[in-house]
Image (cartoon, rainbow, N blue to C red):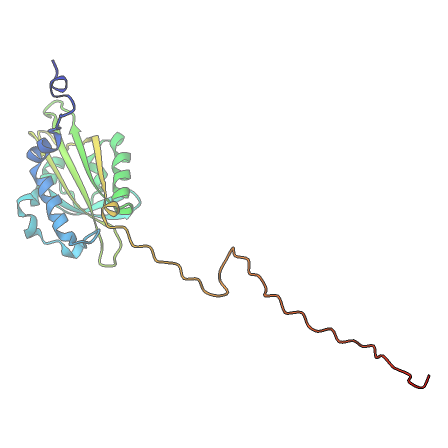
Length: 226
């Protein structure tokens, strides 16, 4: 008998909790990013202090968006270097993915900067000769540049298992997004003030003038001598 048939509708998914235990660095980086917001939709790149996420630094990175759907590593922790077997700074994020997954990663990057949203992606890397299968999780959080553009991303990539032969490239298993603007309170609507002369779709009636007395241009002449 399945668990669902025993508990009915009172089924609680353990997947989020399992991901938190399996990939704690991802949760730490997301919590740090949330703390930087301070009521704003998106924090700034200048707010980042590595000491605030010390336990997750080897998995963390910062991307610079250089074109639609394209972002390169500006800073990256040692775990990413271990996965690729080389320094990743200056490389595009998509270099860590299989050709089949790159379009999905590009679309996710674009949505993070344009929507904006926070995206969490579940990943896998297939096993093979000298390569045990890997599970991983990727986090992408938007940041504003010094000019106010959303073209930086604070991220985290943590894998579980023996890395084995490098480089390791990943496929996308699942994408989860959280829209940041939906979370913010709706702006109050500004009442519309009608300005005389700019009201549209309204018919004005011209006041009717009072009838004027008609002056006769005929003069009655009386001949009293007749």
